[in-house]
Image (cartoon, rainbow, N blue to C red; front, side, top):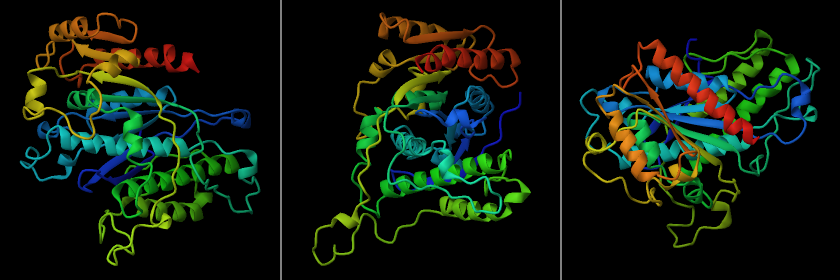
Length: 389
């Protein structure tokens, strides 16, 4: 099965220095009948990080897209993004982008995606009109619609798996966004997440009111809609224009009365919202360990404000699936087995390893390895996330 087409493409600024990060979101919540709109709706999401930029990694990587396909097939909303090195000229992908900088890019997208999922939910019948002569009425809520924990899979392939291993806890990430100035990068990320959530709700309303099947856009400028929804296409293009606009601030983290020595007022901050930290799951594909991991991070420790927990505690606590080729010369499988036995001697159920017999570090061109990987992901989700719900 071919990888799915993205539903949305857009950019967000990085928390590190406002560098624009290319992003994609796949799939919309599956709504077949109005019966599915009754009762609480809990979103399920996944993020997949791509391999090392210096060796040509990007969100177009074949293994990444196959993982996306498996996740979408199980009904998850999936987000992927490019690390900053993808936009740089060839040969300028090393200095300053190893480890901690890319980790903050990752944290930026995780925060965006959590706020996005928390604000996307199927509307009730009161939120839309089936009369095609009346305009659709998108609902903009005052705060996150989801007020209880939802499931989020953080995944990565190769270098992306390494950074996934070092991601901080979601409550640590969200704490950075609890009270932010309107001119801050954190505020911009939150606003863009809200905008995309509103756009997604418009798409859901369109589906419910008109019964049309929405399709993804290859160029990411807008969602391709049914011809009867041409006017709404213009609205959505305006939304995407906002999302894709490069983030340029005249005065960083400032407020109107700053030059007069005045403290920021309540209006200078975004409204404080509570987003429950999601239930985390980890998917690691071809995880590099030492010494390969040291090379990929420039022999620097991944540390700083974004890392607040001992590296592997969350892998022992949260459900984790590790998929690894037995012929991986980049990060030998024997090291993976030793790492698990030493680090996780009592976490057999939480940390599962699926070895691929005839696979190396990359699964490109290896249909058997790809099929096994996708099947392992689907079974893991079915027996884990879906069983919990």
